[in-house]
Length: 196
Image (cartoon, rainbow, N blue to C red; front, side, top):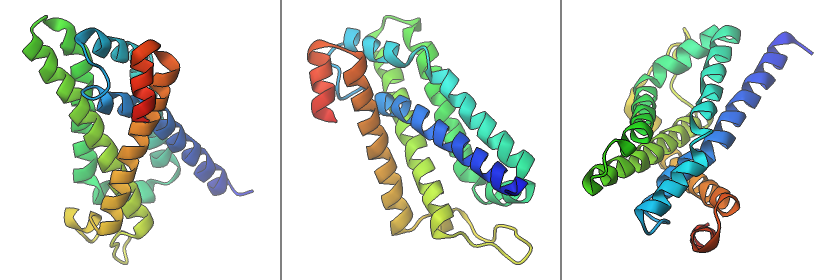
């Protein structure tokens, strides 16, 4: 087996690990305005992912680093072509991080509602952009003879990639809802199950 095949397999495992582990995390964030009925229940939902949400993002860092280390030309082409999309993912992730940390800094209902929606929008936005980006890689992106990206942000969007982005959002929401059925009890678990 060639070293490139081993590295490709390792990178695939790292990206799969990121999407599986961060998927339920994004899903719970997307369900924050829908499943809980009270502030206490929202707190319960956030506590289910509290111990793991930041650890799950380590998979993203390691996957990106491994891609850069093993396939620098692929990394350069992919990251230059998806620069704006990756920047938007980064903004969504930063908004999510801030929402976890700042949501509890005030007892004001408006404050908590704003940060709950920030978490939801960050989770939904990141999931949608990841889905569109991965589908664009599968669908094909314009690359010139030097291996450089030869398109713009609009080239990442087609009916196929948008449908895939929506599918990833729905998959992560389902993943989050099923995760909640395992982590919470009572009426909250029933609502999460019916949402799934």
